[in-house]
Length: 250
Ligand code: ADP
Ligand code: MG
Image (tube, rainbow, N blue to C red; front, side, top):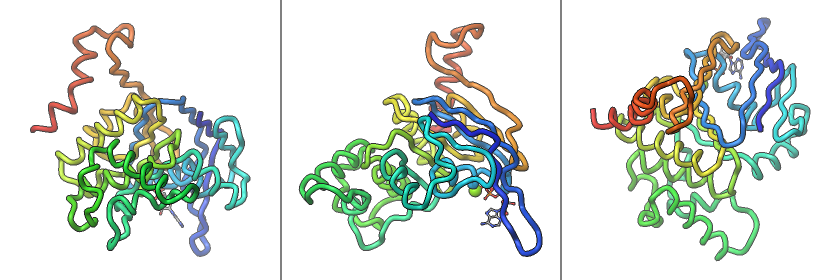
């Protein structure tokens, strides 16, 4: 479980200080699928870097599965990242002259080569790209490259997937496919946090958190699980559930 308590992050820019995060309290339950939205500069990437243990807050606490990671050293953070977190970015960050399979294998540091291969292939299967294992990144579409990047994030079997604008470089159809894939990963029990500025992509999440000037200004459940939310009619529930898929063809 993710718990941010009064998390703030300040950057020094010359003489000035930028308060990129200004007191964030947020709790994300295991297996949830949360979209983070907000205008450019609102602190989304700063928050993602902290959630992903790439950076630490200047104030407040970050409890990850009950452990305070906000005062850890770089080595300790790297260990947590490797064990618990899969990161996905807008630019896929694949090594260019390296096959999809070898790219996915990269985070695996333990085990013999054969075991690593098998696990990487399984991760590629999970994103539907086993038949492209031998392809180089430039032989794949943008959407396929992002799926390889997701496989690379999955290969260490993290409990949490964090994606910072993963559809930012993709066309509408590929964007919806990536969003659907993240939805499936959350249904399989992983916690998914997705940063996006596209409402129709955020609509795949079960919860939408909105940031502005480093603060949380909105937090709604979109709960679309059939038979789940009380109060909303079944019709409305189904409308939310199928909404994004229908727009994929539009
Ligand atoms: P978003 O991802 O929502 O666009 P960011 O988290 O990247 O926003 O940035 C939030 C604010 O912090 C912005 O004002 C940005 O200029 C500033 N900022 C981000 N990273 C740094 C940094 N490394 N040094 C100084 N200022 C930064
Ligand atoms: Mg950003």
